Image 1: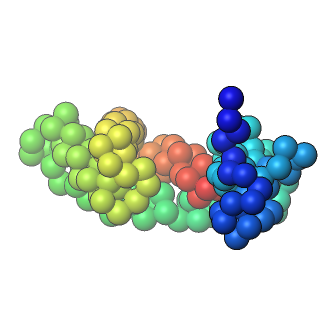
Image 2 (image 1 turned 180 degrees about the horizontal axis):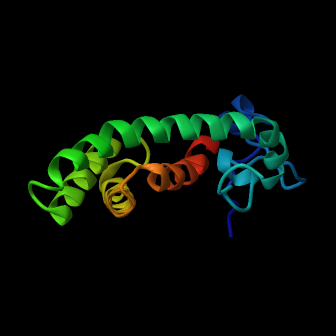
Length: 151
């Protein structure tokens, strides 16, 4: 069976000597990703200690973002529509608006982002109508935004 890497005397091997090294005694491999047996799914868990000093700022920014979104997307629309078109349609209206805004301008994007944020917005809208205020929606939204701001 022939080896997958080019021979040591080839033009490719001479031009890229050591560039695609696997970090072992196996020699040069022609693929840059071949140095790791498994792809990384994200940053290593040891990065958590580096994030810890930033956690107060992350919570502050998540809270400010949540407050802005609750007061600009949900509160005005629910306050003016829930008595006119009833509770359910007004909650779906805010969910669609919030889902579209997040899909176009923020994470998560695309169809999955629209569905996810739309359902969460529906839940937050229900909490606003049940409690008669935006306190619980703000708290839930802040908790949901913390992982986004940690990325």
